[in-house]
Image (cartoon, rainbow, N blue to C red; front, side, top):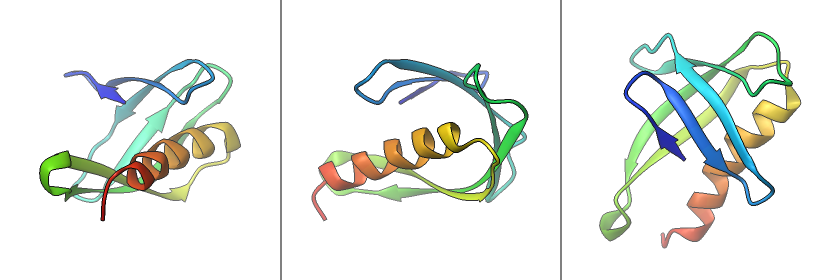
Length: 87
């Protein structure tokens, strides 16, 4: 997952590349729009976790999102990184 300076997010889940946008950041919440097949935005809780030599990890938790594809992409991408990282 690569987050650009204006909130543009590009990532691959192994099946292809997806493009979303992070917006409306607060201390513990963010709104995510995209990919194209999803309308509206989803609201997620977020946090940063230090993983030692693996660096930092973005943790996302769904608060509200009607788009199942976006939920699966955001949560599976974060979970896949977590599973790949040593505890």
